[in-house]
Length: 177
Figure: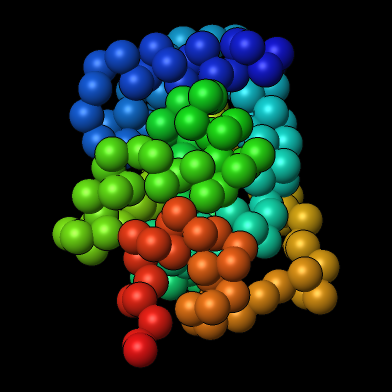
């Protein structure tokens, strides 16, 4: 499956509107209508997309936005991000601080809403099972791990303001005078 095909399927699932879990359910239905080889291709492409987004700066953004992000929480955040479509996903990977431009993220700074969608990550497995009544013949490969020397203390407000200034303005308490 080509990159354009991967994102077009997600866009078609997004066309129905709704929350990310509903988008994931529609993506399963759409993908299950493809040949099994295409579903395997989708799974492999999804693994590449997730690996490309496994970045410390994006993890820091997820941590600020969601008020914390474990390994699984960061994975589910990237599932939510995938459900937002190619443009939002690519922009967030290139510049995680750009997430501050999304109206829903801005409102989450007041509401405390968290952004996760594990169902998006299961799309190829669920689609393959639905189409073939068997398990997808692709292993769930763990994403590469960032160099631990690149991590910063996500709880350090000064570091958050330095690395992700626009998100920090929304999610980090202002310094005490």
